[in-house]
Image 1 (tube, one colour):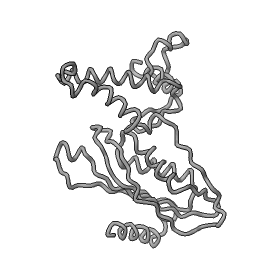
Image 2: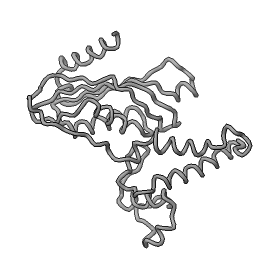
Image 3: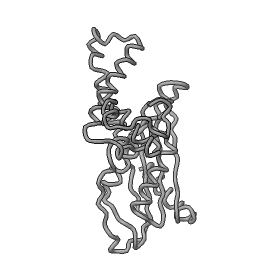
Image 4: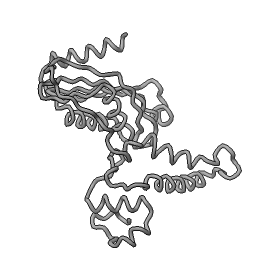
Length: 244
């Protein structure tokens, strides 16, 4: 769709049926004036069977990339199926969070009226830098200060939500904000704190090639932002876990 115009240029079902899956999905997104950046979830604009069609499209395009890199995929047994493997990896593994709906998360009422600090982590996360598509491997800690109206979720669900958010091309600073938004909306706590530290392979493999640097950033909301003592308690407990 040239220029990704906000006004769709295809109109009939017959015309749409002639398009590849990526163009059909893009048509729906543009028609709804919906953003589709690298770290956005677009599952709501995909129809049954289109993920498999996308895999075939990506495989064909990746084969052309390998040709442009002057790699003989016909006689090189190591790269015969590389395009297919990369397409599957992108769509069903490392970028899966873009193409599947939010995982089902069972919520429970706060029957015991818990109002003490809860910390979940470290949760191992895997993402990818949207600048170079290099891996980001890290850990996330989540602090929750619930109230009597909060929705409690199981510990494993924090990991599932993290994986869904992180399995997209993005930058770490935006990823933790997206995670905070999702948890704030779902749990509705008095306070929410997230800390993420990660290795960025765009630093390891290229550029300065520094394999020692890590990035750590945080999001503090509600009482964690207002109460310095609570914030200090959360961070000190994380520091103790790292020492242990």
